Length: 154
Image 1 (cartoon, rainbow, N blue to C red):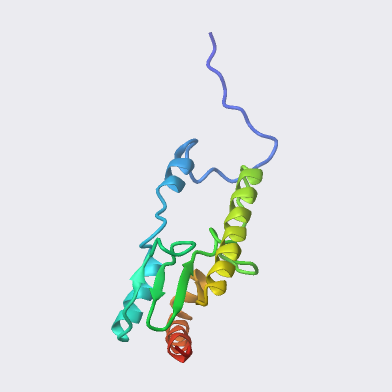
Image 2: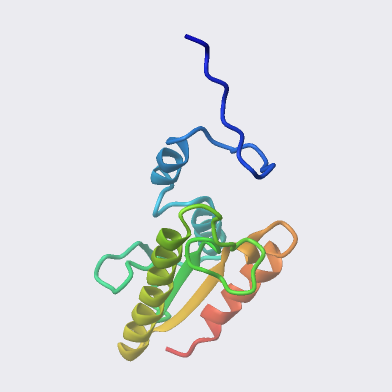
């Protein structure tokens, strides 16, 4: 028997970044808490003297940072996973589009619902986006976050 030649697709697409099956494995190992942007934000707030609870399961959405003294909740969101609209870090994957669109839309809708619940409970909710914590904007955003927290009346 003759050896088979690999199929060529009609498109001259760029090669896949991952081998088949590897992307799913990689995506499944992305952490849901204690991400680098959460750690960065918590570290900054702690250095500024604020004390908080992290990932408190008593509240809708298990907020990343809960500051009971100030009655403030902070979510530190990744732009991809939470569909940050108008952000260059959020783009819809090109493969398995139906799955990703449904999943990311569910995430965004859940975030909105949980935010509304927390606000009904009397909490001031602040969202910090991943793109706001890049090197260029980090200092300004964290300083503004601190001011937002401190500025909230008890």
